[in-house]
Length: 109
Image (spheres, rainbow, N blue to C red):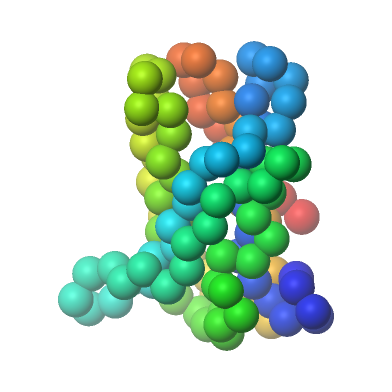
């Protein structure tokens, strides 16, 4: 949460190098009847984090998509992760672990 307000955040870690991954662009889309609309975007900081992908907006129940722009020269160039938020009274943290030939994500705390 940011300022006590529920949000969606992420943290990108390079597991091969054992360090956070700064400079990754991440978009947050809200799924709707007409497809998805970008409702937030950010770039990971020096600690590999984006603390608030809603950009001050209100978290609502529904379907969301996180789109990560990864290394254009790597094997994985992008990743999309679809989420379903039912409880909008709490924040959601979605870490991404990167390796040269593997990706892992999970619902963090």
